[in-house]
Length: 107
Image (cartoon, rainbow, N blue to C red; front, side, top):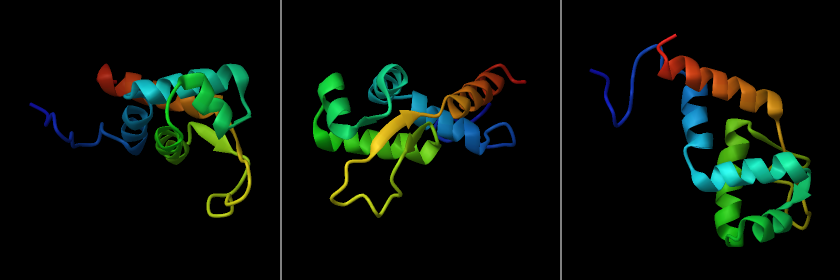
């Protein structure tokens, strides 16, 4: 029986981990949906659209950026005083959805 808290083994890949991190949260999913329809946009636009605090959206965006699901037009660490624009990387979304599907269906 696999471990539920933290699965192990060759089927649990980095992409499966990224997929569960990116898609396993309602806030993340709403941000992805918004960016797909409206991106590239600034963080303030996302905050208004998803009715969440600036801090909450910032945390969600970092997770999504780390998973590769979103693209930012400014390099991390060089964003102070700038207004980066966020968009969805549709190819990465497809990769992660496929990896998660393969994992869930034991392929």
